[in-house]
Length: 479
Image (cartoon, rainbow, N blue to C red; front, side):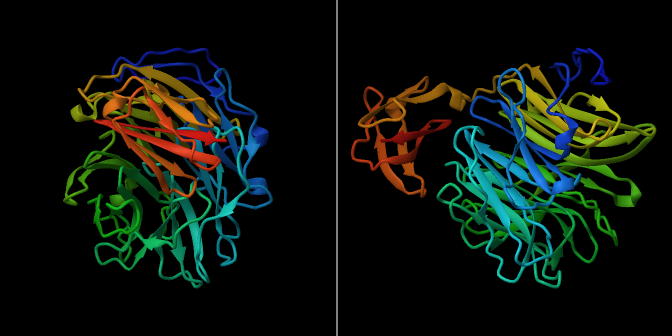
């Protein structure tokens, strides 16, 4: 069953195919804050955190779910003027309650304008001032995108061009001190003997453990398929890459649309738009990271009567569950479809559902603990709209422990810190890192779930726990 609705109608519908039970939609804020290119992540408790742009004054705004409503939007860019449009803009990533937002100062073509990051260590209640990320010298930077590594450090990718808009490539810079400083960027594109990438197409950086993938649209003599640069050393270098798209799309102009992806084990799932044959369609690609072999590339929907265009796909996963949202036009009606499965091992066995119709421009999706969240740019109201739903999780035999099952106390601490969790801490490996990303303490086989931290200097630390299939992180303050 497909559930078409307008947000003004009090509609609650259950998808019989995808097993998502939806709530009623809402505006995140009033249209005075605009609605350009919304992007979303989740905090430690699984609450949605949303950013978007306002083109009129080149701003980026942030709002978080407080439990009953979204907070009043906060401007993040300070005195900077930053790039904001419907098809590109700022990006956001999180690790627990550590939040990072990256943005590009305008004018983009000015070599003196940089990419900046703002950060929050309290779930988005407060943010730092913007800090410069890139070291571009006389180059031009565009389209920042961000992910976090296993310790919660930010990894930022961006497009880099020479002052004459040549030597167009994707590069990646990483931080080991939680966004205070960044390494010199390393090149992540250029695979398949391609000289340049598509210079007007945003990209996406995704990571899992020590594996990172830089997804981008290439421009190999006007062949504009999607590729992935691969790093297996936590974005220190990108030593391989392969095409995740086999459509062989030749286009003399620029499509201004980029990919998105997730990593599950050795599998890279990537979604993108391709316009081969003049038919603009969205696809899902499934690839092996270790071998670079593309297993499948398939259209998200198959033939639809009256289908005009599909574009701007976004993907999210939680455990084995996966969802993809995108924009499509069917018989002149603009739709926001969602394709969902609660076990990607079985593929997408049901047809897509429709979250909303009319005046959708761009969208994003996030998932956590049986909850699914969708945001989108609605140009009829001029607002960012939001809708949430629930689904039934499946037991895959892998014990999934989220960070909400793990606490440390007291916090702040002066002498001894106690760990509380429902995993076996006695057989766990525990590491403590300072804000510079330096390992300052390692423990194993702890008893009574307590750790002596009295010798640590005062400051902010990150405590990691690894046990079997579980990986947990918690921030604490030593005083």
